[in-house]
Length: 428
Image 1 (cartoon, rainbow, N blue to C red):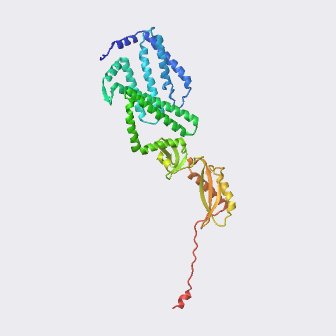
Image 2: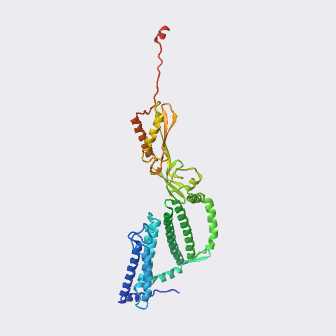
Image 3: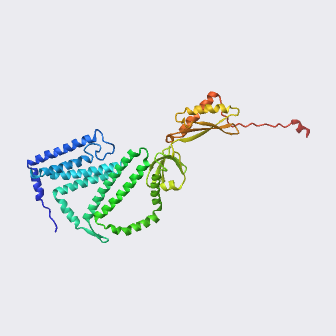
């Protein structure tokens, strides 16, 4: 049986709003809002934590304020029932529900995707849909609309699905997605506190929890739509075969990403060399790893390459890196006395470590002089290696200038063998 729009209830609501008792409801509602603000204010403190979902950037734009105001308003409505005609709270409670949904979606999306431009579009869409649902509910149009949507049906396999089921499933999927992102963000925040600078555990835990929650949300959404989940077994088998043959590389990269995060063979902040590309690991994703060179260039390396190929990690055990520079001195230089002076000069360079101490070694006897290898250690390779090597070379150059030590340059001596002029005259 098709229902028709009954305007009597809406007319009664307007009539009750015009009565003096509505002022009492307004006062009680204002008290609920003030009480909610007074409770949230001390819990939040002067400044909320960055990315807070409960409190937001201000008091009223978090999730806690509308939820607490909704609970207080619902309790006040129960207490006023039978005392005064309920009119204002019939409007206020749906509005507070929509406000809580909007703030939840907005805050979670901001925290999960802080720099995504599409988030703004999703926020506006959620806001308009929630407000439209409130208007339809208050005017009494929403039940009629749902009933009309329930009559639009189509068959998927052996199941009958209506437009209403599809819309409700989409709403359920959206709510589950928001809750999943919220939980994963909370777990990620706690892992940051627990592990300090070790970001690998945080990454693998957050990725696993997010993937698991999104999978559960997908199953709940399909169940809400009315699709029989047992019918997905055949589809799952076919999908597994497709992944095995057509998506081998992608699957291998994802598995390699979890292996890297679990074994911690690479960590965010490590200085590595991959395929003749030197840089610092700035991010480890489930499919690829981002390596940033000191020049600013970034390489996106598939995780499978980091598992199957040779990777030089300059900071796996610690961040100390050995650097070497070579200088040549002329033959006849007192190398033994010079070695100690070079070590002292290099040790005075700010970024050179005292432990392990620098060293100066006689490497070889070259054609033009004696080559000295100067070895020194640094603990901050992410700040550059060429600049500290330049500082060491300048310190050695200043030392040689003070001591009058010659840095030889290639020289060649030519001997001219003269011809006796008398030998030519004798042959005439």
